[in-house]
Image 1 (cartoon, helix red, strand yellow):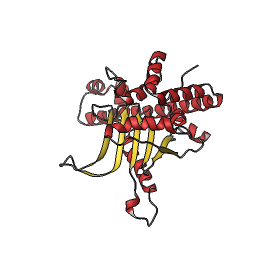
Image 2 (cartoon, helix red, strand yellow):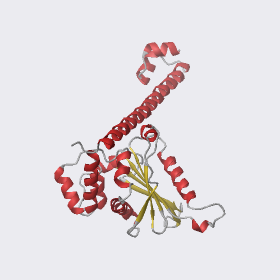
Image 3 (tube, one colour):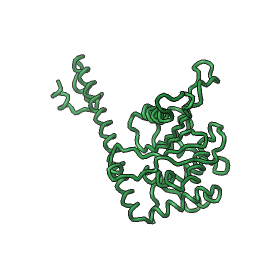
Image 4 (cartoon, helix red, strand yellow):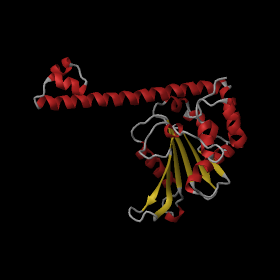
Length: 279
């Protein structure tokens, strides 16, 4: 039986964002929030547990995320992004602000606004930081220890950086267990070891096995995989097109400066015929 990719956002939501998945999500969140030394979450409510429509699954720009609320009203949002669309920082701030605004009705006291935590699981390198797990709050620029408010908390977990770790400490680092479980290819022996250490991973593994054997889930999963693949191709195509356009702009400037076509071809990688036509 093929192991479905846990980082396919449809499967991720099926694992962590459905009714009765609270113990799995709770354990995963506590592993992540441990970095910011927050008190351990004891109970959460999964929100936005709506049926995923065919239109959303096949939408190349569609967004499938997991939302939850803590006992004290804090909102948590988890999003999986497999390809870099070039807008991740602004995107996460946009969705953070939407959740923050949902915490209050018109005319209510601002004191009712609650903390919003956004967690981004990325399968690409985004930040120039060394750590695979980065968190952001509102700190004063010069007095670095002064935080304006703790209502803002944004996490970036870069899985590409995590995979490059030379040694993973499954015994001490709970998040290492979860991030390894989320990989596509994990040996049976390692999975067994992870499940013995973390009962919630055993629950997630059992649900993933069930999903892998369900024909309807498999059909939707394949449709979503195709959609994600198309989106990645669309982004790569746009990036390549941008690179080509940039080469033409450089070639134009060099032509105007009187540089020989041979040198321009070597510099830009463009064909001489194309440069001649451009001239």
